Length: 138
Image 1 (tube, rainbow, N blue to C red):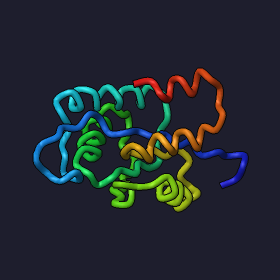
Image 2 (image 1 turned 120 degrees about the vertical axis):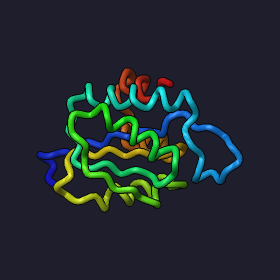
Image 3 (image 1 turned 120 degrees about the horizontal axis):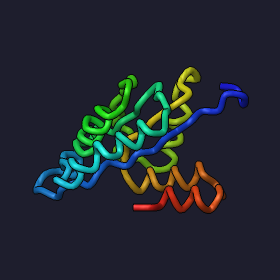
Image 4 (image 1 turned 180 degrees about the vertical axis):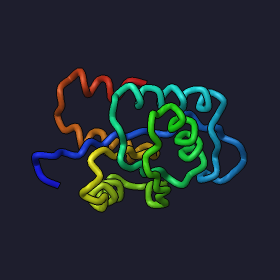
């Protein structure tokens, strides 16, 4: 990838999850999460970005978030369910980004905190205050 063609990376944390008596990996979305995920998909569609690839954690809550959000997009990108996104450190996440093929210009990553927040902070650097404020809005 050349400097003339920058890669766009969009980070999406899974929607609100429930806390039933299951393993953390198997936690499903809460009712609120099932309502919020399509809204997130609609906001993604509003960006006008046509994603080349979506990397999604294998956890139930991220897969459910993606299943509901992607229905709002005009075109479903190729999706790879990536085990390394679950419990990823910032280093793990950056390694995955570096492994993304050069032909992927617009990448969507569906994952978990704290790595998604850490990646947003690391990738944004000291970006303008308004952009930083929008990233941290709940």
